[in-house]
Image (cartoon, rainbow, N blue to C red; front, side, top):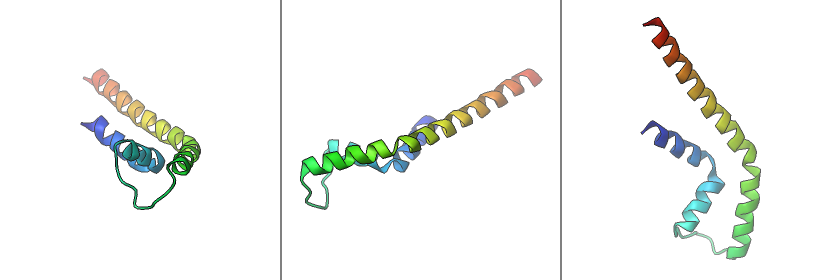
Length: 78
């Protein structure tokens, strides 16, 4: 349940990926854009989000590391 929540939060931050997923799922766009142009726009925007993905990945890894460290500390204390 926690992993799903984190995944949804990450997806919400990555608007390009979210839009692409919605497009593949059949969501209708409010604007009438040439699909080829829209696809390349999505690709370009996706490339620009690599830095954001890296930062989010580091934040998630840091959080998981902190949780694991606290669990080990608690286990050692008991």
